[in-house]
Length: 101
Figure (cartoon, helix red, strand yellow):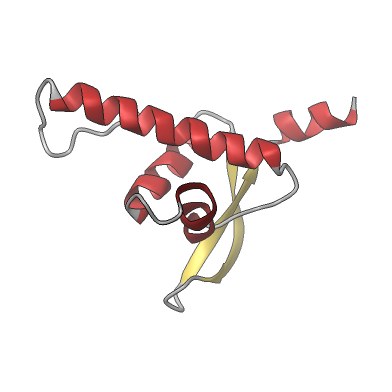
């Protein structure tokens, strides 16, 4: 989901929405490939996008996937690349439980 905070109009708006949806798919796929590996936004930026998108796009994708019930934002934090704390996200239990069966 793209949040149109810049009041963009068509055709750019359609392009931005498609890019946002694609980013969410890629982030979820990365978590599904490594279901026991939690990650911070900076980790996702590095692993999934190799730094090719803004960190704010990663944070938006993580938030949207959390709101949809696919990821969970944990209470744990680690130091990010600039020494500031970052929360850790993990795959929602609904995906983890499927692995057991």
